[in-house]
Image (cartoon, rainbow, N blue to C red; front, top):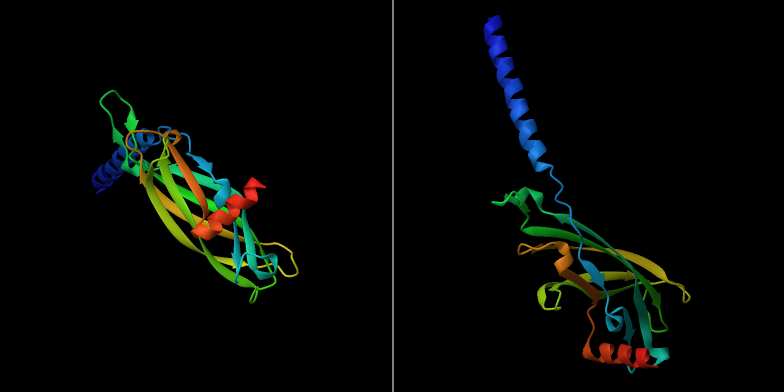
Length: 188
């Protein structure tokens, strides 16, 4: 009976040692750089109008106040390469976007809806993946800005590269008229 206990205990110790060795091999530092985040200036703000583009017709104005990026190399999908390196085939990206918004003269209530996008590109800015996300904006009272925090999650293939080989773009999803309005403001 004591021998069976030791045999069972020995098996558990051996299994724990094997798992520890495997886990040790998996904790190799697979961290690398995150992609660079860019907000195109023409897409960093949005002004919604109720009617012609006139200050008295502003429903709301919003701007991207801050962006934070968390990226994770998908270690659970990593594979050992012949020369001893490790290839990680995917990156998980969590983009946290802080938006400041102010209600205008034509605001209806304390909230408004909009959309923002996140795009993954290569270094030549060729779009590899893109997604749009709904946005519910809190509007400040009396021309005071209120902030809204939004999160966007993306998963993309690294194609044998590190995060430094990619770019993350974010901004408001604008109509052609809204984009033209922003370009006009930036030109002045």
